[in-house]
Image (cartoon, rainbow, N blue to C red; front, side, top):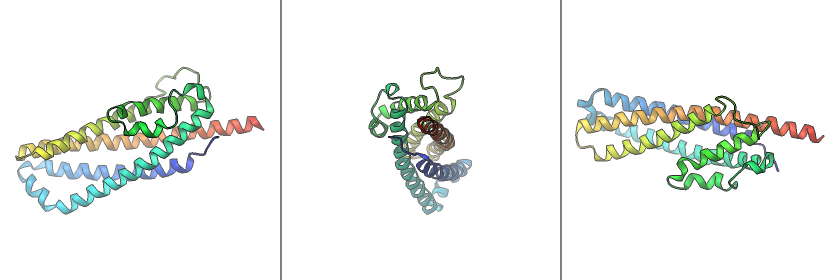
Length: 210
């Protein structure tokens, strides 16, 4: 049974927009610290409360986005199973569970997204068009890069004992924020396009049934 993903897509879009704004603010904060390595330690201490609040806000926003995004992702996967069930190699449960499997979550969700995308086209069995998956692939690349850089910068911050080490951690953190913000923008485009494709296909199926 088809279920309308439009409401969830709207919620995901808003939450992703909030994430992007917070990530940009985080990048500017890290860049400000990086601009003067000699005063980095003092700067961190002077804005410690502000950085803490920003980190908490970003963490809460990302958590909320992740929950709503996964619910939307599961819904569009279920719809794909109605559109073209023989094109789906994993059950709808994987659209949720795959995100929580270490390492495998770096590629399985993308595979599911590609299959859902293809099933949501007017002709699910047609070959991929030129650059058809560009937004999806760009989103996933930036998403994975952002995750890796975030983990790296966190490790470097924990180990930093000198100003140079702190500056290096800040530099990697800025890079991570940039990739994560880009992933957020691309995710919005992906969500809107896929939702629109499913809406158009469902409308066509209903019209044909009448």
